Image (cartoon, rainbow, N blue to C red; front, side, top):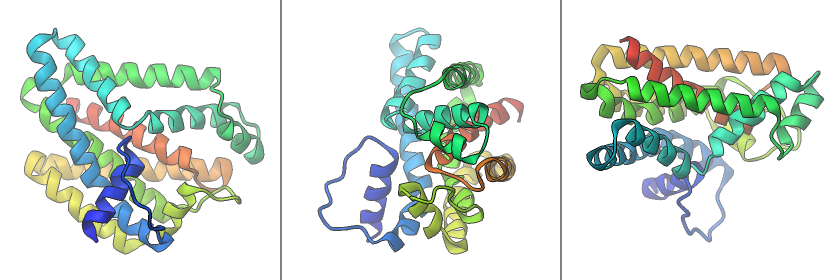
Length: 246
């Protein structure tokens, strides 16, 4: 059961396709979301392997760019796309309906393009600025905490779109139990690596997640799947920046 939930969470967050012919019970989505941090850990390990292998044959600057490319590829650019749609909608929409319409549009606008450029550029520079003795640890916890933030976002904020979607299923299936279990999983990963600093970074991401949720609630009376993706991207960047500070 746990293995099946993990494989499904892997399918939702990465380009890895898990063959599953049986229908998924919507109540099971909460259990799937609990395991998002473990998927993040797997992504983090992939980033570490990429960094170690590429840095052995490439200049460090190119190696760090390769790490960022792998991060985008393994997720299929899903979260980056959600970030761009969120920026486009919040920056260009005049009201809730207008914002939701823009966010649903498959075309990317000027605000979205600028947002992606600034996001990826800052991520790249942050990765390049990490100290060698902590870089691999940060590359592991960055996707772990980023994907954990889906849990408090889904618990504390309702879904904005009436027509629903996969994001709505996740938002409505996350309860306090899922947040607690997911948080325990995250702490078991980050505390051995960063001790008190790991706890402080998780607390900071929790606050940032609530701020993003409150802003989204004010703009569109809730959250969407795009906001989930944007939250992951923003929190990954904040983890990188916090790692440079602490």
